[in-house]
Image (cartoon, rainbow, N blue to C red; front, top):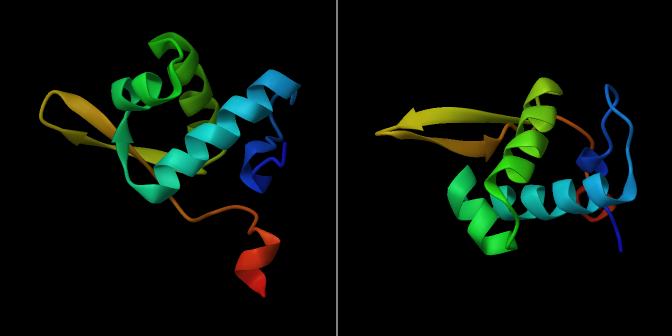
Length: 88
């Protein structure tokens, strides 16, 4: 599996399962902002595992959240490494 360059984090250990899940989360959020619940249902993962990875990504300032009604919508900030195909 090819990992998203932004899935590699500096402040935590990068284990295979975390890298895979963060790559999937970033792919979904790059397409369109989502709530954690929507992301969890799309990936068929628990809400808590998605929230854990979202907070890790937010601590590195790769994603952020915006309050909408009763929940938060998560989106990418555009900060971080670029994919090679984006540079060419």
